[in-house]
Length: 388
Image (cartoon, rainbow, N blue to C red):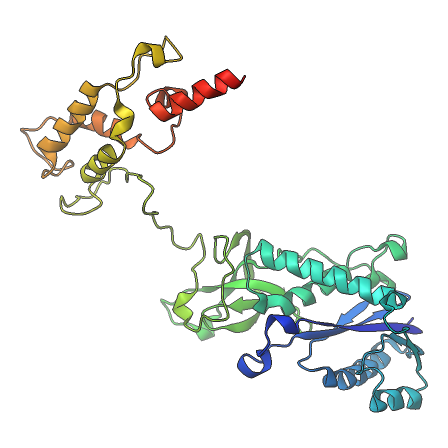
């Protein structure tokens, strides 16, 4: 093992032209691949000049951990690999340099294909969870972690991890990248009434600890924790938008977990169900007022259509003008009256029925009977029948 080592650098500089000045994000990742086991190691740099120190550190670690020595290094003709200090280091340690021909990246195909695989996996992870590009390094690191532990065709069904360490990897701790994760807060770091967990985003696996790497959007920091409860089907944002934008500097602008707080959506013409609590007549949530607004907005669907326009002659549940007028009468009588209050002089039995009818009114019919009460839907159905 490690008789031949392939290396290449992939850059993401185009994403953040001023990354070093503004955020200090790493936007280069060199990776090294053992040709025998296909084991891959990935690192993250800010400038290409750091590649030489990265390689020296990697060489020392691999020699100490595995007992094998690098005999040959295959790279492209990048300036970071053919510099004087890099060349001298290889000569001193007896490492043979194999360089690709100019504009011939296919001669280093193992690394180039690995580059494409890592980037494709990272892209899928980010977009599937609606995460910002600031998490690209975590996505790439997690991609390599997974690739080292899944079978590869070049090894005839075994994993690179197994070929390198001579034992099968454990994948029982794999989780969905970017999912919602609740990290336990130790008793020593919280008061009696403080929450016992904090909502975070799962961003990978720790290399130095037997724990998970989580990102806390409120503190904008990485959390290393072993006691984590995962909601692999949940997203921290909960909607199709790239969350945690780089331009957002206020922690309050972050979105809460989609299952942490459930709030009613406005503008959809939906009436809240009756509550056991007393409702104020001046409140905008009064169901009578909302129902009246719905009737005014969608009153056109209450027209009394002639029988010739009804496709189903057995249909007898269409709304008529008299029913619409009855609804208006109910609203006018009780507009300033609490519908759920105690009034002996008011019979609410018929009002509740009419209220239920009005609550069913929506933009799109829910069944064939409702569609038959709408001129637009009748016209569309007739056109469909003619086409058939």
